[in-house]
Each structure stands twice: as C-alpha cells, then as structure tokens.
Length: 147
Image (cartoon, rainbow, N blue to C red; front, side):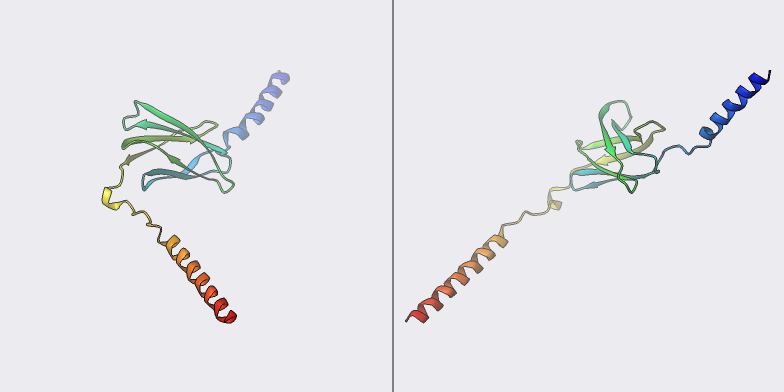
C-alpha cells in the first residue's frame, strides 16, 4: 500500500509543475499593406522560437501557402507575404504547437495614380556636370599658367 501511495505522490509532484507552466503564445499580430507587399509582424512570449503562418482564402476553405518565420531575440517576428488581390485569413501559431490566432485582411494593389514616380536620373546628370566643370576649370588654370 505504501508503495502505491509513494508512486502516486511522485507522479503528482512530477505533473503539477507542468499544469502551472505558461503556454507559449503569440501576444500581438499586426498585418498591413505597404505598397504591394503584405507585412505580418508580431510579438511572442519568451519561449516561442518560430511561428507557423498559414494563408487561407477568406472562408478558410482553400489553403494557399504556409510560412515558417523565426522569432528574433527581442521576441518579435516579421515577414512579407506575396499574394494576389483578394480577401485572406491568416492562421498564426507557435511552431511547436498551440492554438492558432486568426487575422483577416484584404490585399488591393494601389491605384495607378498613387504609384510613386520613378527617378529620371537627374542625380547622375548633376554629378557628371560637376565633374565636367571641375575638369574644365582645371584645364583653363593649367593653360593660363603655361602661357
């Protein structure tokens, strides 16, 4: 009888610390669009080393892609997701397991007028002009001293 009682006590002592352990979690998730890129970033608890991100259609029926993102030393993660225009749902969880956090977002390409204009390389022309003027000035000074 003592043998069984001792076994139960040892078993309880081994199990109790695990019941009070804090579950590894994702504390904050931010999803936003930066030009044409979808950025996903977040904050995790100390014991999360990577997160699993699954991309589904809006109704979570069609699986689109899966990403694994490593968590940095400051317990944050950040990644870019490349998807077509549309409505999506992200399911994000600790890579080692746990409950999924769900976030929905809409991806829309920016309107044509909002696309930043490209440079016309004016900086290169200014540098070439300055170099040319400097060379011309040096050439004129040398000729003047020789005469």
